[in-house]
Image (tube, rainbow, N blue to C red; front, side):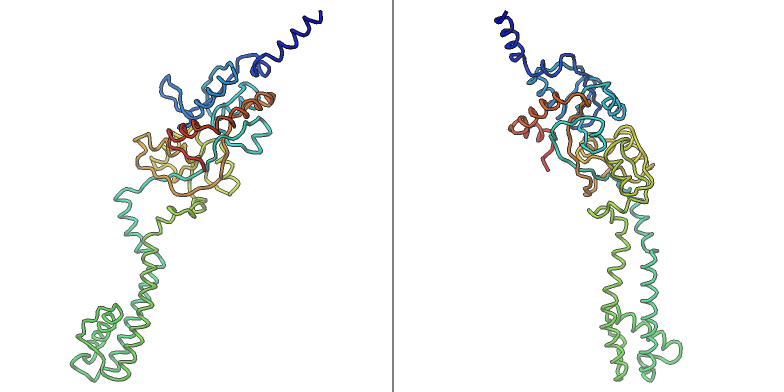
Length: 356
């Protein structure tokens, strides 16, 4: 009897880890998220697919892959309809209440995609920039200065009929001299000869130099105002615009927390990028590596541009149903061991990714 008991106990300890954790076939949910999960017809590959297969093989896990929508996958995982999600799920406090997460295997961030303007749009933007309020104000001030100093120059030089004629023609001569002097063209056809005329010319030259410099900067600013969203500080400029993101994603939560008012939600990336391409929204915001990979691989999105804007740092992990604590611990341990190998770096490089 004792020998039978000893053999039974030893057999328990000799069982593989997976047998102690789970006996049934695991229900593994996923949705396409290139480059992490790439599905082309019946072929399923990608970083997460490779990682999951490696983990499942090492732990001797039986599983069944189940394709589903992103929102459906999260809901199924929350209620236990599936056991594991191999998507790159962002670890958040709200999600942690409903599911377990393995150790993070990749860190990323969200970014912004916009549609590049056509040649005609760029031209119309260039023309419309000249009607910018600040530009028009500067232009009016410039005309006022030219007229004022033209009048002053004519007043002091009006006795010289050769350069500054009498009457309204002399005033025009003064305005011409003022414009030529202010813009530093300096034709030399007209020049003051009186002491007061020369003093007025000095004030015009040095004061005009400073004013023209400021006006030039204002013009450059007005002509490039539509390019401001291309800089890393452009995130807040989209708060009043129509933007899109993925439903139930961490990017959506982040936008709501930062008071974005006009958010269009999509079930997957492709419909969102198509909507951006067709002009229905002004920007699409989501995970940077997924957006870059999709735009690079899909020629229909070649007019879309990823801005150099980074926000909402995210840590990716596999998600598990709440009752799968022991399975989560075993998978997390194996993920850590795989991440320490050179093979993991090779896989990331193969899909054009690097660690943050």
